[in-house]
Length: 177
Image (cartoon, rainbow, N blue to C red):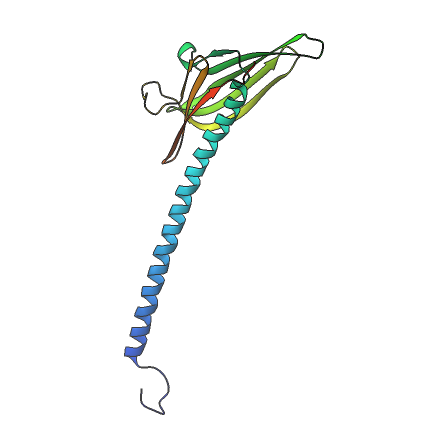
């Protein structure tokens, strides 16, 4: 542009538009990657939370257990059965049982529920985890339990979309129980 003239030349407009388009393209690619990674991370956190929650509940019950029945000795929907006894202030026994079941299995993925009962009258059912993977034909990845006195080994796998998380818990009951 010559001094005293107003406006921009066509070349200046083309160069500035090209720069704006390149910056906008780079920004949209970056935003897409961030959103895709955020969704992938959310899916992974979902399965990790499910496995951790199931591990917490099973560990809590298994530390008090005096009797264990594992996946190998049960039929679906039963996954794990734990039993224990405590004594009240009068020395009378109170019997407890916590049974874990896999329900609503679709393509090997279902929910893990805990049914707790005691001889004192307590009875409750709790949804422990979703997206739990159970497929006996897939021995390397499936959720399962085994018991070798005094250690209960629980492998939990959760699958949600493309995310998969497996954890193995080795639980020993509390001393003196």
